Image 1: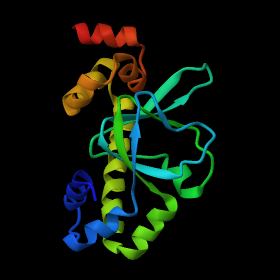
Image 2: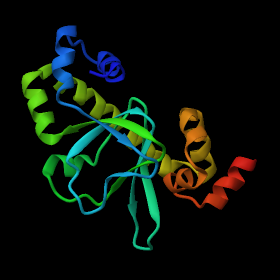
Image 3: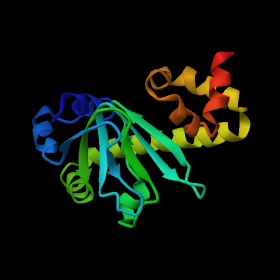
Amino acid sequence: MSEILQQHIARFVNVPNVDHAAIARFFQPLELKKKENLLTEGKVCHSNYFVEQGLLRMFFVNDKGVEQTIQFALENWWLADYTSFDNGKPSPYYIQAIEKSAVLAISRTAYDELLQQYPVMERYFRCIHQRAHAAAQFRIKSHYDLSGEEMYRQFSNLNPQFVQRIPQYLLASYLNMTPEYLSEIRSR
């Protein structure tokens, strides 16, 4: 198993060292070029992706043809359209590499087998999903409570690693503002 994923799992659950090699067989390593898509709208999200290196984003295209970024994932983060992954229905989202990236993919079938054979991994994924859910709730509340400038300041304080790596137009999309307005905020 990749050292990066092994360390990430160890942050949440205790897996005996002997099991790491066995668990590794459930994952498929993928190398992505900048702007390469892992998922496109209308396709089923067949895998959950762990970012070993690089940066991904999830987005949709709105009725006006504008891309709206809803999530980023950098090293040690998971990303998938969990609704599509869970029910096998087409996704309204895209998942794209923002920079050259290396990810580990686990298919739905492999995921189910992994959880069946290694119940401790169910606890690991529960912990990951709980954290992701809490982050989504925090983001939704921020959209209601904060001004655009406050949202940017909060995001940059909580996630300085993103602000340095994400192109301004994508960050503006994520914060639901124009790149021009974000530029104005950053210049203050």
